[in-house]
Image: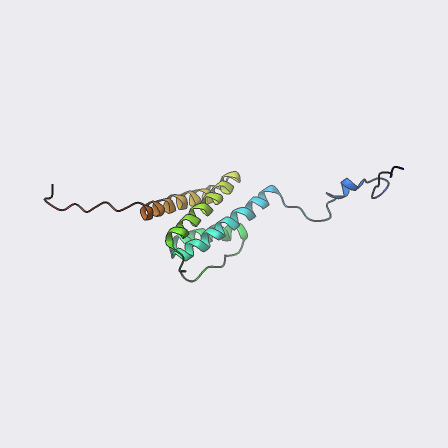
Length: 139
């Protein structure tokens, strides 16, 4: 009436087979390196779209350090609105900052924080209405 509990072998139950180790595992550090390199590579793509070459070179150096090879670079600007690109870059820099902080990568964390500040300033400048010009001698 009842079905007996099945096992893969007399010594190993089925639930033990799921984590059997038949494939290589990465360490937490390796996983964080991969995540950080991915976030920085995405930030690099947006930075290249904005035409920020010097900053892009600094980000590319960090990606190359993490991956061991230089990243692919975008060659030109797109027709995407600059405000949208700055918002995307700000979000990507924030993600990179979180991962860099969790793996204690000071260089990447500083770079990501600087990029967050720069893109915050660009967003603020684009969304804040300009103050009216004051005329000399006007009351």
